[in-house]
Amino acid sequence: MTTTEQIVRREAIRRRVQGERRNEICRDLGRSPRWFDKWWAEYQRDPYTDFCDHSRTPHTSPQQLPDTVAQAVVEVRHRLEAAATPATRYGLIGPQAIQGRLQELHIRPLPSVPTIQRILQQNGLTRPVGAGQATAYYPWPLAWGVNTIQATDIITRHVRGGEAIENFHTIDHYSHAVWLTQHTDQTSLTTRTHLLKTWAKLGLPLLQQFDNEGAFCGGHTHPQIIGQVVRLCLFCGVEPWFTPVYEAKRNYQVETFHSLWVKSFWARYRFRDLAHVQREAPLFWHWYHFHYRPPTLGGLTPAQVRRAVPIVHLTTDLRCLIPAGRLPLTAGRFHIIRRVNSTGHIQLLNDTWLVGSHWVGEYVRATINTTEQHLTIWHQPDAESAWRPLKTRQFRISEAIHELLPAFRRNRARCREHWPD
Image (cartoon, rainbow, N blue to C red; front, side, top):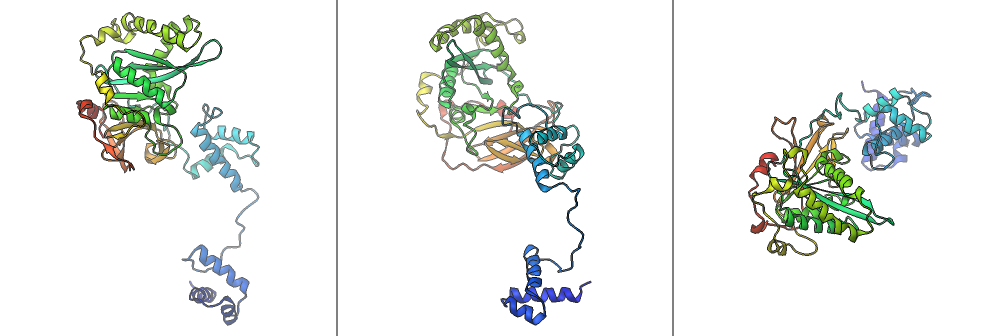
């Protein structure tokens, strides 16, 4: 029910909105400037206020947690979950872990574990039961033939005297054939050099797998960046794809080769410098390619599996078609697999994309189509189910998109069958 006082307050604000002076309004209504300022502030805070009296009950109590402590709980949770520093890369992210971190930071008063849980719930930072566990299905890409999928990774080792050797390894998922190059850095330019040599030796793949090293993805600074390695793949008709962050097990084929390489090559000789490593590496490669029998190949060597298989090599003529320096952006697709975080988002291309709280803890695939300039997020619940599109967003590209050169065109029906866009 509207009271007489509410009518007076509403009349005062109406006259002020129409341009009348505060002093004149207060004189006519018999109210003080302090009274007017209070209700003018109330109107500015909420233009739809009913100008009723507010409860005089205190808004805070001695037992209420300060806002600064609640904010600290939220910030610590975000830091632990981001795992962006060596101190937070490993460990738990639950209420007890947060309480321990708050204690280290001397936050006072220190909230209890139930209070921290309540703050997390209020801020949408809790996960549904079972979400984020190891039971979430990971959509493993399966190679269906030689050079359908290759994976590239870098392992750093030091020679006598401390010089760092960056060992670039690429493995063909199907035949387990590898190519190795050694360098003193791991820049995108060096990665380009390695890939060109690899594709000349092993052949061009349909899909090229990477982890999230800056040399591969283009760096971790600029949002929606499409780096030079991705551009090189697209220019050559190869679809790059990236495994989830901090999940080396998703790159297990090349990680397994790293272990064999360390045991059978690096640990068995004391190398002096880069040139020494580069002289010895071909001997290891020859043994591996022609004599080693990986357990999954049924007693065959990589060379035997690849025998008589038609392979599209990066020939000298094809390589001459690739421009030197910065590459243009070519029509094609690339893929990024991520796990949805506790807020329903994924991080990719140095930007945040909403998937939805329903998908917390699940793995999704984001496919960017440079021709259509859109990004589609896909989910596959299990190996027997088809991919399901969840969202499609515009992915605007502020540069010209070049058509794939005819010399690099190949039948990609199986790629789209396995990974639709």
